Length: 80
Image 1: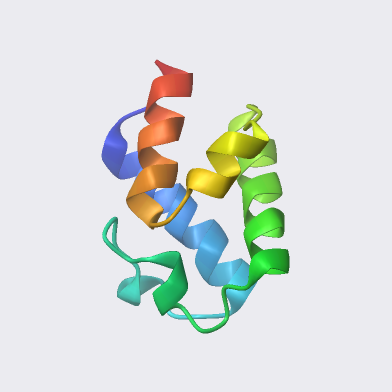
Image 2 (image 1 turned 135 degrees about the horizontal axis):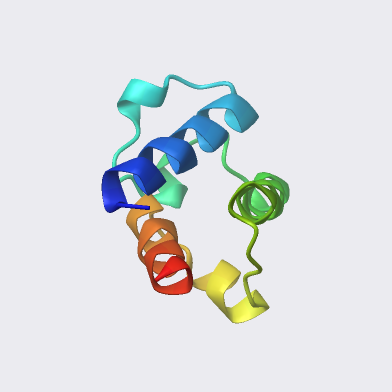
């Protein structure tokens, strides 16, 4: 799976979970800049991404997700 496919899937999951416009999400979008993205949403998003991609994140990885690009980069490593 290439980076654009991963990004598209991740942004779709985030958009649907937070009920926000997918177009506004990029790799550079910071978690702290999305008003709807609180700690509960962070855990839910990580869980939904794990389920969708058939992988698992460590707690350290989840805590390190500060922007959408961090999630994409982690998935690229796991799916390589």
